Length: 146
Image 1 (cartoon, rainbow, N blue to C red):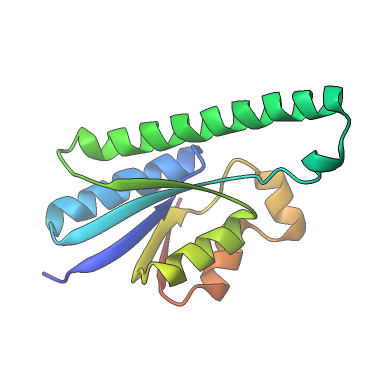
Image 2 (tube, one colour; image 1 turned 90 degrees about the horizontal axis):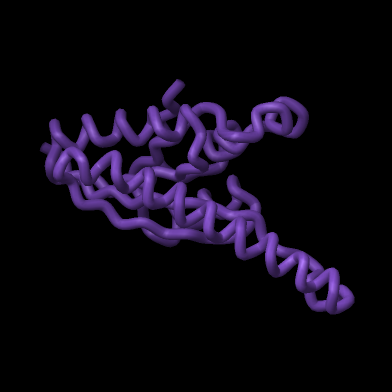
């Protein structure tokens, strides 16, 4: 079997969960696959310039976002743990498509497996979905799961 380094971006959506299940099945067929999970959180902007009361509010929101990201990562890892597979998980901040593409390049991933639609389907139809951007800009194979 082929050794392969796979990146699985996850946003906790139904299609991301289906992509994780698909990847777990692939790992059963090919135990030489090394898979990493990536959760991308929105980056806080302009926090330093806000007043103290507003800054506290943004820090509370940021803390909640980070907790949600950890929860998404843990739930995604569980998909693999239930199958007896070991995976690594990472949380990054920024624009999802850009972070996924850069992370895959820097990590020399050979394959990205991701859901075809994430949690922000409406936004995706207006400005181009994350999966669409990844397909066109990634330097490796991309598999979308519906």
